[in-house]
Image (cartoon, rainbow, N blue to C red):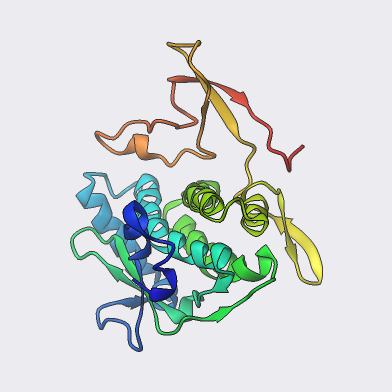
Length: 262
């Protein structure tokens, strides 16, 4: 684990900090993210490999692309977001400065590699610390996955929100409800627009009004906060709906307003 992150990722959280490594040279078999983005057939081959391990047909790779993206985000977002929000430190995650190790058997991302630690950004706002991650790294990756598989971009951004939210909520707890971390959580997930320097704000693709679900078979139980978007796991054989799927017939859905939307 990168020493910078060691104070954050301890105990049961330690594995989430071990998916980012820093060394003068990336492993020889790691793939630079910029090269992956520049070679669509290479990414498509990874998705087809993933489809075979999931026993999914290759003619429709939407659920496969969602599953692959979840593993990508699981490895990338916790260490990068923890550094950005808890440490006010920007790690270098532009596609030309980060490499990814891929599992030979199923094509899943396992670990990301950087060759330097970037720079501290104390006192900067959320956009200054997250613009590169969102718009230079994730946005082109998601666009390519959509191009290759017809997977709706909102599902990919919903997957990103699904990993950012618990990291930032845990960051709030660890920091004693730090106003800076709270501002990042609000800015990233609860505001419908994203500022652009010198231009009109763009839509925030991770913003979706939260919804709660009442269990159809037990209406007396407390409502469950549902995921912002369905990840399509229910299309994968033997998986079915997850426990907070907004499409699950287990729930009768109701809209739950967020503070920013109101």
